Length: 557
Ligand SMILES: Cc1cc2nc3c(=O)[nH]c(=O)nc-3n(C[C@H](O)[C@H](O)[C@H](O)COP(=O)(O)OP(=O)(O)OC[C@H]3O[C@@H](n4cnc5c(N)ncnc54)[C@H](O)[C@@H]3O)c2cc1C
Image (tube, rainbow, N blue to C red):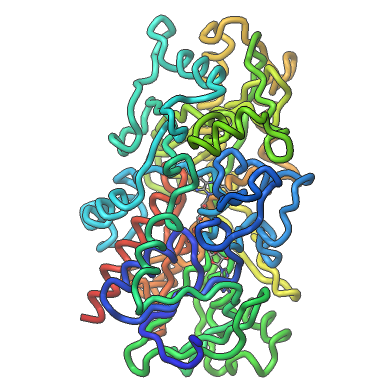
């Protein structure tokens, strides 16, 4: 039992960052315990949740790319997948976000590091970590093993509208993971981490190599409820069984040298810090009222601005009607897919079930210059657009704009008396100078003019509808009570990394990923990324985990 030994590294949370760092640390020969609150998702790890047509195979719903969309639907049994104690979608099964996400996988833009991360985490420092991450996790634009794309009618139309030289100012076609820092008026086939026609990512790579080492142990179905801490020194974690097969008790780190690494995701890492007496006083007081004497004494609380730099990329979509657009019929895929498609997938991992439905491609980017205003210096801001016709009526093609690196709005998170984590300030369109809205507005107008100006023959307005102005539509989309609906699930930044603990820039962890005021407690997950990157974040997170492994192993040499 993991309770009966001490561990050099205890890693909390087996997600996008937790799995890679666990693997890299276990390479050193030291003992590594990876504690995951959820159950096995992928069939490779013993997962069992699947539609009936996968019975008799080793695959689960998490392994088949096309089943990704069903995490959002009410008519599919999604119980036990999303974290019940987080008010926004967060995955609480093995793999974390990488078990349920769309698999879009992008190499970081160099400015993802250079504009917001401290020294030691700039692009020149990340070269080896990037190389390691992107040689372990491969990517593809055609997950289907016959090397074809399916239901590509919408993506082909969009790609030609973007790149057609007969329309003014065409986009340049690139391969995003070959030219990661070309994100200005460029378009690329979407890059996915699917592997051999199945979900890839950390569960299919790093976890496989880690689990071959005798010094590595994966503990599933077990929630870490708090860190065992005496002042600045961490001695282990308290755990409780979440599901059958889980473990309850206390697990200790190796005396004097052991470390605990929190990789539980933006909201759950913050919750663990709060429950361990680390955070803003008001949140610690909320936890104290619930946990009482089980919580560390207030005289030992470490006041840090955990959660005060929360960020997420807001998304707003425009949609057009396109004559003759191929219907996607994706709704039937879970319970009643076409038997021919099932046969093709099961025998050869090919066909529409091997890809996100329908092809979520291409992706395109524009970068805008933002003049200085108030305390803000001039900078640039990236808008990433993606194309899909899923969950819309037949014949409708959507273009979804995501405000990415350089966006200025910031939010905050908090905890309530049921110990549920939630954003208390949403990081959307709240910047004083209105730069975020200005960029969205400019980008949406440029695209709308292209789409309705002849770049897609016969296209007509759907959202906004004909007669409703684009400005009015955009204003409506970004205001009101529905703003959580703007989320792209790209949350980062709840434990801001800085060069100097205690300075005014809301620093929670130092460049060694160590929580300020502690000796051996680290955070390695999306919490330490100081602002949304230029593209979907998991590529940045795996690289960050590789970099964190380098610095932590360096500390222990
Ligand atoms: C529906 C959806 C679609 C997305 N699509 C994409 C995409 O296509 N591309 C992309 O780049 N990004 C995508 N993302 C975002 C991406 O998945 C996340 O940014 C990423 O997974 C965050 O990584 P993380 O390591 O910080 O946390 P996570 O991956 O969330 O991992 C945290 C892990 O910790 C576990 N845990 C939490 N609390 C505890 C505890 N107390 N004890 C033990 N274990 C605990 C959780 O169960 C989970 O396994 C998507 C996210 C969602 C929700």
